[in-house]
Amino acid sequence: MTRHIFVLTGAGVSAESGLGTFRDKAGEGIWAQFDPMKLATPEAFAHDPETVLAFYDARRRNLLSAAPNAAHTALARLEATLASAGGELSLVTQNIDDLHERAGSQRVIHMHGELLKARCLNCECVHLWPEDLPASESCPACRTGGLRPHIVWFGEMPFHKDEIEQALARADFFVAIGTSGAVYPAAGFAAEARALGIPTLEINLKAADNAVIFDAARYGPASVIVPAWVEEVTVGLGGKI
Ligand code: OAD
Image 1 (cartoon, protein in one colour):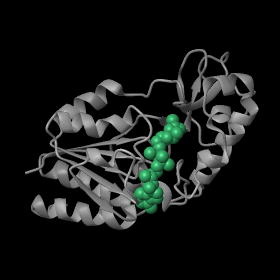
Image 2 (tube, rainbow, N blue to C red):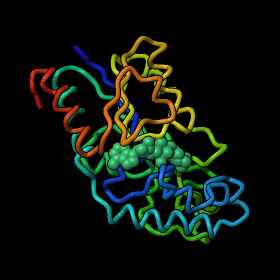
Image 3 (cartoon, helix red, strand yellow):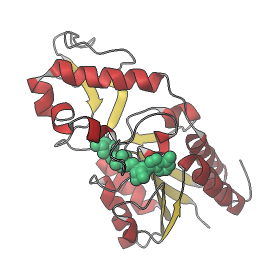
C-alpha cells in the first residue's frame, strides 16, 4: 500500500484560481505576454529594478485576491489522510503562490521561492512581504541592504535541493500535477523517480513535454481530476481523513 507520496505541482494547479500559467499552448501564458529575460533574471533586476518589482507587485496583488481551488484542498486532505495512516506526503511546488498553505497544507516545499516574501541583497534575511515592494525599501533586519522578491529567477539555483532529493528517495509513488515539464530540475524528477523504480502519474490539462516518462496519465482540469484521484487514494488507505 502506498505510504509516501511525492507530489510535484506547477502553475496548472493554480490556474483555476485565476493565476495565469507560464506556457499556454494557445499562446496566452505569462511568458508569451512578458519577456522572462527582462523580468525574471538577476541581470534584469540589476538593470531595471523598478520594472521587475512592478511586475511582481502586480502578481502579488493578483495572488492576494485569489483563493485556493478544489485541487489545493484535496492535496491538503491527502496530507492529513496519509499522516493519520502513518504515511507521508511530500508536496513540492514550483509555484510561488501560497494557495497550498491557504488550503490547509502543513508542509510545502517551495523550490522556486515565495511571492509573499522578500530577501535582503546584503544579509539574505527573508521577510514576510505581502505588500508592494518599492526599490527604495531597505532590509528591516540589517537596515542597509535593498530587498528583492524571494523568487528563484532564471540562471539561479532552486531552493531545497537536498530535501527534495531525500523525499524522492523515500517515496513510493510520484505524481506531477499541472506542470509542463519544460523547466529543470523539476522536469527531471519524474525520470529520477522512474530510475528509482517508483510508479509515476501525470495529472495535467494536456500531455506535458515529458509525458512519455510517466507510467500513467489523467488529463483534465486539476479541480476535477485531483479530488477524484485523492478520493481513490483515501479509499485505499481505509477512508481515514
Ligand atoms: P507552465 O505554465 O509551464 O505549465 C502549466 C501546465 O499546467 C501545462 O502543462 C498546462 O497544460 C497545465 N494546466 C493549465 N491549466 C490547467 C488546469 N486547469 N488543470 C491542470 N493542468 C492545467 O507552468 P510550470 O510547469 O509550473 O518558474 O512552469 C515551471 C516554471 O516555469 C515556473 O515555476 C516558473 C516558470 O518560469 C519561475 O518563475 C522560476
